[in-house]
Length: 246
Image (tube, rainbow, N blue to C red; front, top):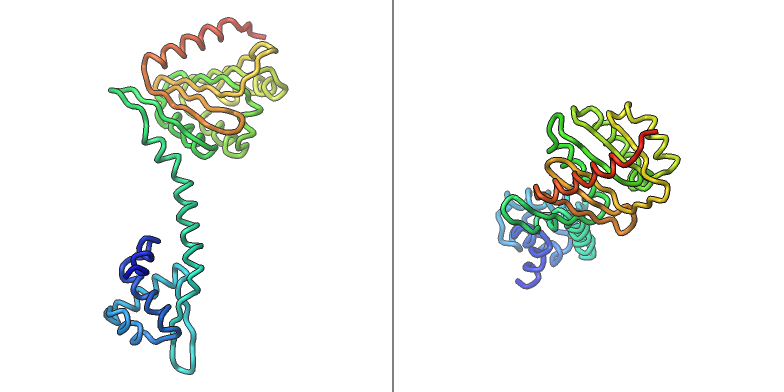
């Protein structure tokens, strides 16, 4: 019972646990023997074995006209556990985002890793409304380097939206190159003073303020609070107006 409990903890169903345990104990065996040992109906054992085959825990040996079913080495279970751990690690940023500070219509969400940050950018373009402002301040070189293929595609998709995009970049060769391409991306772009150094990207929309690091560790904070959003917008406008167009 203790061993089958552990198998269930690893993600096997009750029937899968009983059939695998019985197969492990019997060695190469027929469906009938496995059904008798596990005390599960033979018709059910067929579908359970198929599920275990898909998980890589049982294989088939053919001897003469007989098919024998053999449990794989239990070390496979460790690999299975590792897959589950990795899947959990991949989803952890989503769980962390759900654990946020809330109060009325306001909340703060914290994100870790490039994949989580990319997910927030999808949220930004999903929530922005036609004719809304979409304001950016950051270092285009560092931003694109996080995942050039994804962010290039994101820029093309964002450019198709009927929104008012303005961006302020630090003074780099790439930043100035993008300034000349601004119209192609439905954007107005200005270059920050030469001594400006930004290691954080800022995006402001009427719905959100999003700040994330452009250097490792890649972490981000999404703020949904009308007062904070308005304050960031006003500061953005002050900086924007202070920069003379070239």
